[in-house]
Length: 146
Image (cartoon, rainbow, N blue to C red; front, side, top):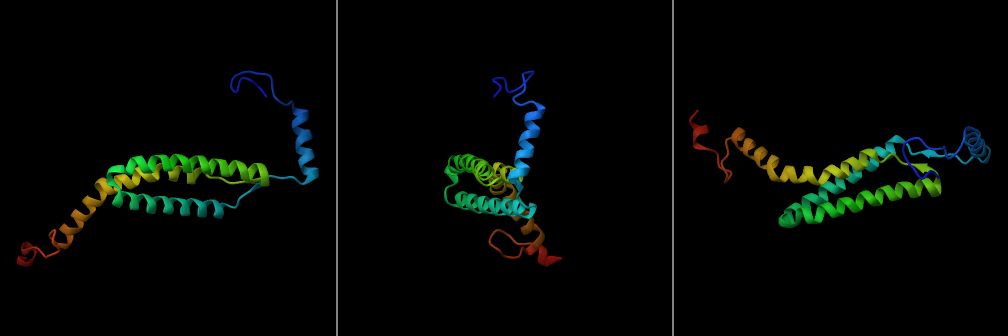
């Protein structure tokens, strides 16, 4: 392998070696299989749902430890999914496209925290204004006068 990963270096393999490897893979029927797109989407949805559900539970139970719990979990989850993807490619020649899943993992903690920190309170406040309810759930007197 090249010691310099970027820039101008001598190639690892020349054209004839690349073509020989391609022909060898074809003759052995040793192909790399792409996972179907529906599987990639399903994995993304399930992982995102699991993360948001878990992070909402953490936000309700352990508000003061939210970042301390969620950030290491996200990092471990990212490393685990990249490792799983490499393992599937190396051992079974199955290529998973986990880009959307990794992005969902990276943003799920912060977006859940944003929701619980500000958006949820504002949404409840606006809903109460629209439906003319005060904090105790009673209808405001001003809405009865009109």
